[in-house]
Length: 199
Image (cartoon, rainbow, N blue to C red; front, side, top):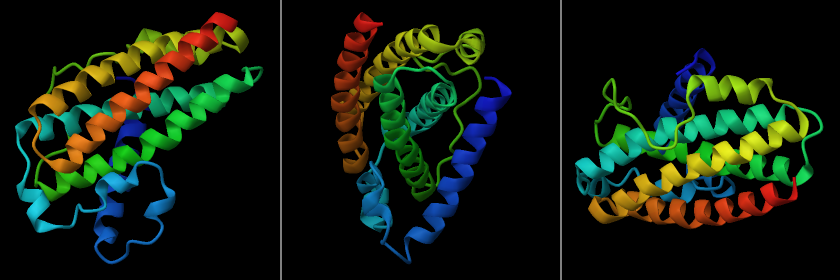
């Protein structure tokens, strides 16, 4: 992981913990954030007891996976001469996955589980440091094509992890999110494949 990704991940975790600490006192505002409905029952004691190791692994793996997708989206949105449909997709990914990071971090806090994965644990679809540097350096149509190609593989990895959660998980909120991730990211993969064909 490069320094930018580590910084983003750390910031996401800190923000999520702060959000979770405030959530019990106020429910307002979360309705306007995509994906936040999955954490709406996070303060219920019964829900926190209904989870298993698959739920914990799902959340721990998906948090940094989502964080990288947000970082990649930020990279493409900071560039000039990117086709409008690609910037729209990057915005959509960032706005969906950012709140989901907060939601899953809140679950781990509820479950009294650490947010970090064990060292050496790999996540399917993650872009390596060389790939992230290549995306950062790319410009224009070249950057758009690279972003779409990398994000398709990234989404495919997320879908694999989400399907594992759907099969093995227990927490109703995590199961709901896993199914939503599969549905949303399969649709985005099709959209990205169609966009690539036009570039």
